[in-house]
Image 1 (cartoon, rainbow, N blue to C red):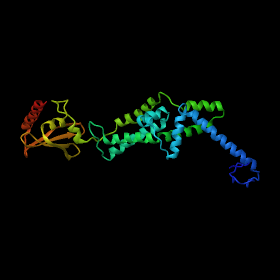
Image 2: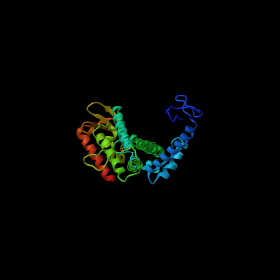
Image 3: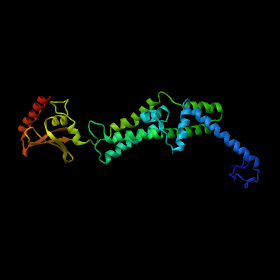
Length: 301
């Protein structure tokens, strides 16, 4: 409790202010009434700020208070950043975009290799983590953001009409919010990330690529249709090229080893060596071997 005369904080049970000797009995009752009035007014302002769905969020916020901030929001879970934009929480969208960009930088510097031609498990995990976090704590985050904005408006406005106008303008929801959120993600994360260097998995880069003669067939799919017990391995790594090896067994039960030389700078590769039962083929025989593979694939499909 505070003294109405000097403003100093005093003991609620005191009858006289120890700082200015002002009587506090009437002040106590006035303070209680004032506190209750301010509390009701703030809650009304919160309802005006949230808009038509204030009853839904009031219920969710009460549940969150009972469970350490946890109350599930399906819209936040499925839409994530778009939901944030719908509720005008653009700053959180910006932080999310910066977080994604920082994660990409960290993954590059630690040498993480992204999966090629498929959904990367790291990216998938991050997306799921964001969706789950917003689904569980989205209501709590919205409450904190709403309280902060409402308090700012209350502190910076001088008339009731001006306050209500700002609460309505800065609160509620907007149909174009998801579009603005998408633009923030594109401008802050997607575009800058496209210029960042990326470490791709060299084995997958070859495995999920194709020969010029069969541009619509992945090399891995072609080999698996012809050879048994196929395995891929990254056998050599240096500054200018990488060696990727495929091993398997052909229809004659011969052990096959096919090595590809991959060039990271040009994103190209070529068949470097072929070994059949330990015997390495020359360049001419390698071309014949590849032609046999193509013919056999044509016969199978």
